[in-house]
Amino acid sequence: MPLMGSPLDKVEKWMKNMDLKGITRDEEKSMLFVNFKIDERFFLVQTLVSKEWINIKALVTLLKDVPKIVREDLFYNCLVANFNLHEVTYSADENGIWVEADMPVNTTESNFKVEFQSVVFGMKYFIEQIAPKVKFDVKDTTMFT
Image (cartoon, rainbow, N blue to C red):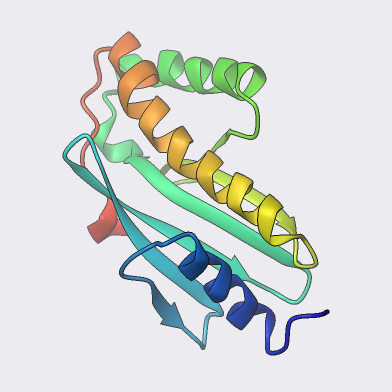
């Protein structure tokens, strides 16, 4: 039986089924947001729902906070993690390093849950495994996204 309503409604329902608290919705941008606290730091997970794709992402660090001397090693360790970890993808833009996942909008609730959890796992892994290798202290990013 197909779900009724918009793709954004469907994804919001899936997030509620995961018992996520504090979900906010931006109808104009077709986005859902939820804050996560990981090791005393706060991160905002953003879920964009378009006609064809669902993109889940979280900014794990701002580039301006990363000393230039450790950037190359930090990027290298993210690439190694991309290769070694299942379903975890680190990406970068001009502002910072992200952990993200995407899937077609016609995905299943079960697959969405796996992909969403991979983003949360990726944030935790970045904080606990990647950043310490280069002696980098990760800061909250919720106010910057």
